[in-house]
Length: 328
Image (cartoon, one colour):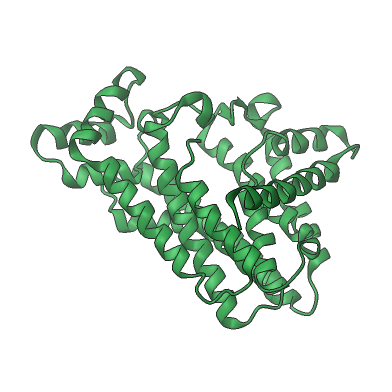
């Protein structure tokens, strides 16, 4: 199948998801609750996670239309995490717009997140059949892991020493776990075999790992307008990303001291971003990050060997390339 054909199918399903998600919240009352819900949902995003549900269901033989509600559920879940993460990080912008707690207020944002996760469960249940318990258990475990990952991320802010393996555990929970459950839920809804469910789960987890490290990389190398947030914000906030930890691991002498100062000062001034970007270049950590992204991408591709359905498999392979080459 050509890239043009694959993109056409991708855009078709993306538009269907978009319309169904937005329609879900139209004219619902009270406005004080559903307007901020609509606001965060309508702020855009790649809709990657609902597409993973649809493609995984299709990969084991289920028509897309029987997994739309579950697809909507994971996107609501994802936006629930964004609202609460923004509160915890005191973020003022999300996708180039004011975050919910800034545009409205803190109480409204908390309630918005709570409502989104409740709506997520309600929609998930619409597509469940004989394997209701396993699907709901998978979804719930995903919420637990995301919360654990966010907690670890907050812990890292106070820890002076964080290793790369520890960092990978954190992003596996905070980011990769959600991609993994999207694929597993799709496979479960489609009645996949144990090997198919494992293959798609592995694909989702490794794709999620590659996606997060790519996100770390784009934070310092991306275009600010396309990326949707200030470039270098991770350094400004003193976040211990893959790039920072790799630089710390490889540096010596004055270079290491410069990086240690980021931890001591809990971040840098925005006018120092270029200095640290040059240090990263000198230490070759950009290429280290790209190697990690390729490694996880290759493992994701390997996970598809037990999948035989043509269209969905081709789309899942194509999707990896799209995500690796993205600039936002």
